[in-house]
Length: 449
Image 1 (cartoon, rainbow, N blue to C red):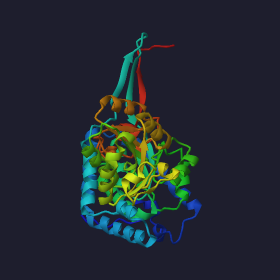
Image 2: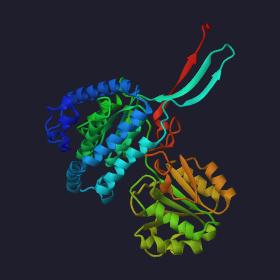
Image 3: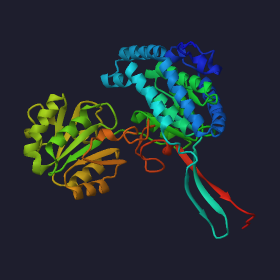
Image 4: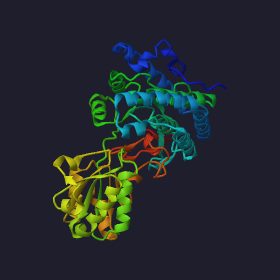
């Protein structure tokens, strides 16, 4: 079988007339064209969703494994497509962190296909009985997990989101309508085409995985208003994108906002452990939402801890922005922090550092300035840790662990759809269970009310 690079028309038959210039945005489509195309994709996704509910767990797992095989088989054309995106990113002057998030190579592509296989190996939540009971009148009621239906996902930069989102949604019986950013359009089209083509050979219903093949901003608004076809929309990207979706959406939205993540170093913290965790949280991958952005240190250990911290951060190339109490202890290359620094998501090798007088002050700072994403306490006092974890109002709160562990894969969920800061339906890493709804099944024997 030939595994050439897929063009727009290969994946989207109704778009075969579109010239490649639409991907490059040299000849933008009209708003009416965009609306017509997206609505047709939505209609087809709804039809696919009706077919997906008929698939059993073993058939879904087989389809996922074939999808992964197809990604491996198409390595060369996928990397060729990614090279086009990287060239465009360089021309546009994107940051090093953004380019890193965009980059695919053989190792990362193998990780992508491996993540799809991991989803196949996970337990299927669809059909799980959440509760059951019998009423005094004899009615038997069962609460069971079911697919949500059609999920729209809007994302930026990272092409692996294409496969993560599609595989997780498919495993839970949902059809997926994906809209990626312009910086990764070639990579996204190539990956989505591999998923659908490979899956169809194993029984995947047509149009179960669709990727919008153009990046005009109007497509976001049309998706957000398409409540007759989309049951849920999930934006992943910058604050501007998420706010635009929230303002326009006619269906529920699960938001993945910024991550202003904190670590609080308590007086009883093991210093060696603390330095190791802080460095991992800040430097292992600084351009992601679960990276450390603000460090809080108790005043009682400031004099001994700050010089060691400064040495470690300086060696790792981290710029320090600190309060007045920390500055003289960190050394001359630390700069004064501003009020804006306490709310900053740097996504870079920059760390805000603040001295606090108590656990309560640390908790107040996190709840006031943080983004309710991921926060950690470093302490050997378990009672203190328990209080911190109870009072900090974040999706994930940790004790003696790196903030980088707030991740679906690290939680054992497989390739997560993202990390939600919402409080309803889904909070924290979104795995398979969070991509399901539920319904009630009521069995009777002629009862009337």
